Length: 199
Length: 291
Image 1 (cartoon, rainbow over the protein chains, first blue to last red):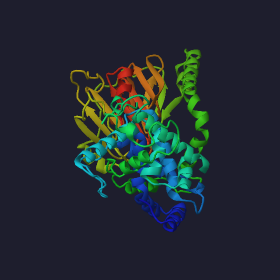
Image 2: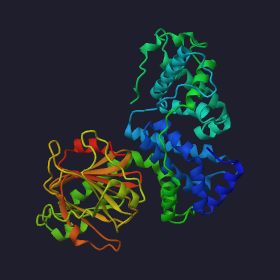
Image 3: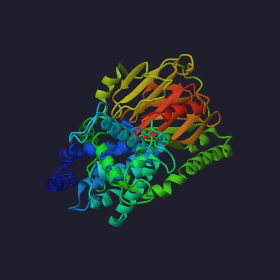
Image 4: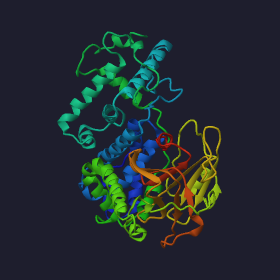
């Protein structure tokens, strides 16, 4: 889902000098993570695709402001996220993250028994439902760290905040996730598990 | 099952302490999320960039983006009042010049969106034929049309509307103009001007006005609206004249016709227009599902 920094740097430099073919290669390298980032925010496939496309066009015209030697992925993701958040504000569609169908077990085979497997799958579903209920900004922080595995420095760049702030934003987002999954004093079943309640 | 989360280590701490079980679960779910398949975007992005001027920092697109970025906080809140003020100004001016139609025509200003120019005329054009000159272009399937335009065709997702009954592509101007058509049916009344239930037209225009709408001062209302994050206009009341110009700015006579109530807005890099016998609320409701 991304290139080696040296390759990125060369492609960015070429694109900056007007080489659209080089930029197309960057698009191919980063379109998956861009579209996924947008999807985490918008929850709609069409919106996510549009946001990613628009972000790539805008990023191209902003290359003159890209710091030589900086990492391209977080810089791009910041543009993608902005675009997706703007779209989400205007369309207010429901968020619809979901698990892939028929995804019973993980490859590392950490599941001890059928009951254990059912419980684990139930936890995953509850977690996704809870993610859907979070603010897009919180979903994004969590996805950057645990799903797209950005480093702290990359997260700071992608979120446009200081490195020191990344940890606290992440932990606040996790705290809210935990609250949504099971508010104090309630059993888990009292939490809306099905579908997205986010508006 | 209900209490499972209560048994997880770390549950119960209210704030920010690490919760390894939760973190492990979040990480695990990451590889299981059902992301929609994404078609290769490099083609369409590359096409858009090649069609636009050179990527120098002074290219119009670059400047437009820079200016828009820099001015966004200033522009956004005042855009609507400015448009309204402009309309009011025109109307006031026209009022003071009420006895001189010639002078009145001269002060008639214009407003517009990308690819659309709205002109004010003193009187409605009553002589144009109704229901002719729709001239929507070649009839295709949605997939065929999609393959021939450089933008992603947006469609309304309003559940009561369903897929369009017909799709047309009018090429020549800009990069192609796509029209989706729904026939009149119960719940979707026939518009006198088009003979159809609903038309949705979309195109990607650059700067030049190519789609001209002439609006009467007296009989047609024009209201600035925001749709899906873009600027737009709601045009209602007496039918207004609509026409196209070609790349050289010449009016295409076969395209002149009257249009009824129209909602017109910019969405991403597209200009979208829906026309039908709709109220403003109905039009906005459909427009907000377009994506």
